[in-house]
Image (cartoon, rainbow, N blue to C red; front, side, top):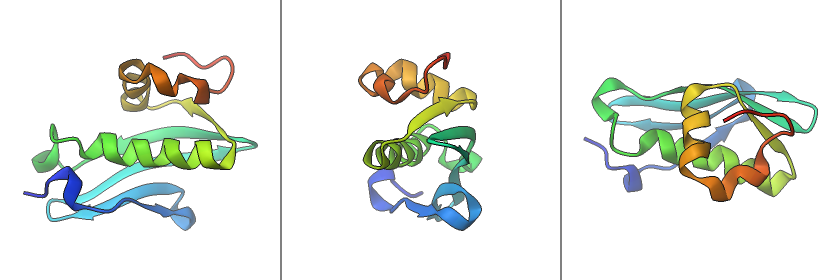
Length: 100
């Protein structure tokens, strides 16, 4: 089993996602770029890796990128909406009118 601190998250711009390849498979947070916003549309982690922080690490990398690029985030994925609820310090990144 891969521990969350033992993998690197990379931005795969060609595939429009942030991803990490771990022993259990591919962890990913997919987005669509719409103007100056990342529309986060899907988060996926292999079943064997769930509950150990992998999804949070991948989503956090996406939000770090958005912040560094001056982008906002539209959380269309339920996991990303939940992430924003658990991390209110990140809510300044929300695209105006977003619901969490």
